[in-house]
Image 1: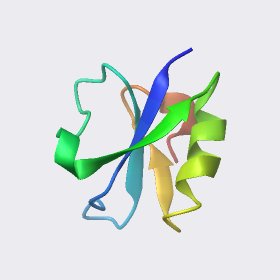
Image 2: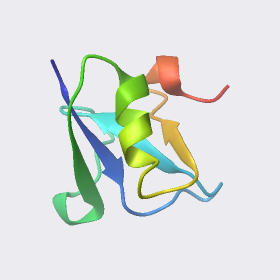
Image 3: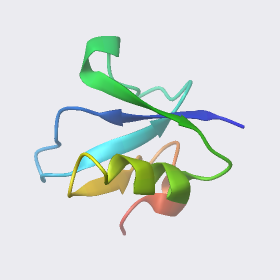
Image 4: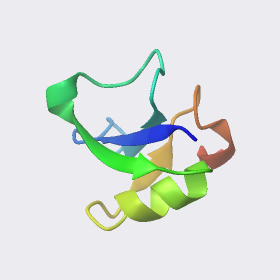
Amino acid sequence: MPSYYVNKNDQSTGEHEVHKDGCTYLPEEQNRKYLGVYSNCQDAIKEAKKDYYNVDGCYYCCYECHKR
């Protein structure tokens, strides 16, 4: 199962993006928070929402959780 991270910095549109380990767009270590190991991005999003109100999945590595 993959590890997930959330970007501590919000995007220009206001959301904090969740990424899988190994994503090309994974933020620098100092700009991300480790969420844990999950079988799906939905569970990682739930964990990220404990710290951030507006959360979205990365278009590239968590497309199924990306708001369309």
